[in-house]
Length: 152
Image (cartoon, rainbow, N blue to C red):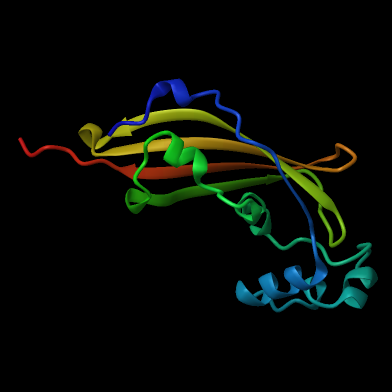
C-alpha cells in the first residue's frame, strides 16, 4: 500500500489539553530531567516562571490525548503494525507552563515514497497555541510506513 498524495493538506481535528503539574513532574522524571525547575513549583517561581515549565519534548504528547490518536493513519489504509515514529522536530516560540490550556492543530504536509516504494514517509506539521491564541511551538513529525513490496 502506498500512501495517497491526496492526503497532503488534510487537517486533523484539533486537540486541547490543560497541562497538569503532576503530569509535568512525572514526565520530567521519566525523561531523566533532574532539575528542580521541572519538578518543584517553588524552584520554578524562583527562576521567574509562574509555575512548572513544560519540559522539552512534552508537547509531542498532546495529540496522544485523544481517544484514537492514529485514526487518521487507519483512514488512509495504513496497517498500524507497519508504522514507525521516524523523526520529531520542535521549534519553541514561548514557554508553556502548568495550568496552560494548549491546543494542537495538525496538517499533513508531505507524503513520499522511498526505497523503491518499500517505505512511505508522512510528514505532519503541528502548531501549538495557548487558549488566548499565543503561539507556543511548532512540531514536525515524520511517520514511516513499511509497505509490502513484491519480490522482483
